[in-house]
Amino acid sequence: MKTWLVIVLLLGFSGKTEAQLSIPFDFTSEEENRLIKENDSLKYYVATTDTSNVVVINEEANWYKLLSKNHKLIAEGAYVADGDKLLQEGKWVALFEGGKTRMAGYYHRNMPIGTWTEYYNSGKVKTTANYGVFIFKGQPASCLSGTWQEFHPNGLIKVNGFYSGTIYSYKDTVQVDDPVSDQKVPKVITHNEMRAEKMGHWEYYDEAGELERSEDF
Image 1: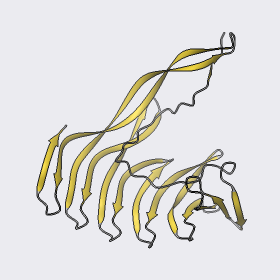
Image 2 (image 1 turned 90 degrees about the vertical axis):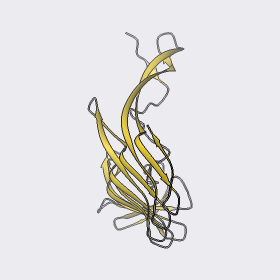
Image 3 (image 1 turned 60 degrees about the horizontal axis):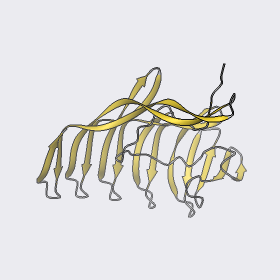
């Protein structure tokens, strides 16, 4: 019997859209993130995305903080361990440099869930979004699903609409190693993808509150 070794890393689900809100979790692993120092229950690492930032891991409280090079808090939230990996869990908050909340929402094992809110530096709401959780063949995934609203800096509605989450399956051909012939041969792989798509009636308003246009999906 042939044993196939796939040389491409495939994720079971993907579902990001341009509109998706997220809070940075710039810690990959103890092997990937260089340890700067540690004391008591705190460990300090070089952040993954921007290496001028610092990740602080509190192992006793299962708490994560992302600090700027000026030691300002960028984001924080709880995590759970999954083997060697850490996964975002519960409420997470991202902050502006001045300390005001920039974004807040909930995660379940790295998946955004429930209602998320994005703010202007003034404290007024910029965006509200909702994430649904879907189960496909026993595997959970989340994406935008439900009402989506954006607001102008003056507080008046800018966009009002609705997203639906749909699971798509599609096939792709990748090159794999055949250990018997020691040759690269094509193999068809099935991908599952969560897509957030606009649906229903969408409305777009100017800063004076006047309807500029609308569209239906």
